[in-house]
Image 1 (spheres, rainbow, N blue to C red):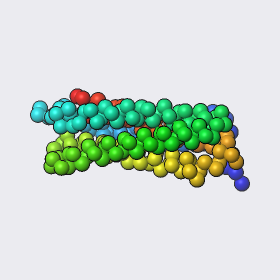
Image 2 (image 1 turned 135 degrees about the horizontal axis):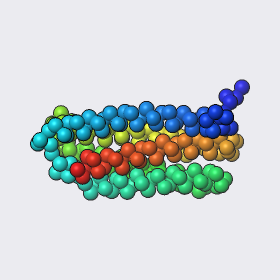
Image 3 (image 1 turned 90 degrees about the vertical axis):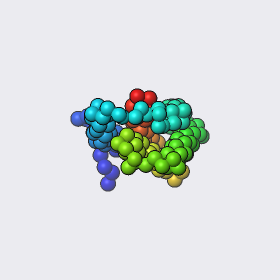
Image 4 (image 1 turned 30 degrees about the vertical axis):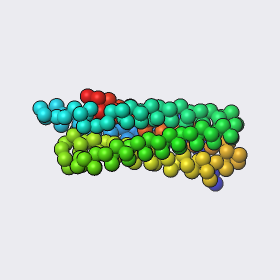
Length: 196
């Protein structure tokens, strides 16, 4: 028995189930990151000696990571477009590039964390670093989650491209929506933590 509205849109929302599900999930993620951003703002406003992010953090690496994630948003969109136009090789290329860019982001973030730890800077050092490691660490976990999904669709999950192309296109679209959210969170994190 097939679950209704996995491919067809729901008459009440105009969305298929997976798209409705990802938007509901992302609403909860907005609340999570919103609470953390609010905590950061409240702590910063009430602390006269709050360090500026650029004094402690590596702004060039963060700027590089911003370019990497924005580029990965483009490649995941191109992967979805390739699925819609039934171009399997292009899909594999663009999703592969997205995966590669996500790995580059994580490697740069690991390098940055390692530099902090080697200089004795830990989440327990002060409130700023506590917030920094919490926000960027949680974001990093979301990147890893997106990586797992994209690797699955690039590898064993890509068999659905030929057997159920419409369903597969919907899944890639939903994965892309999630990935755009991950990128959007970083676009907020970068200026708030590193530049202000």
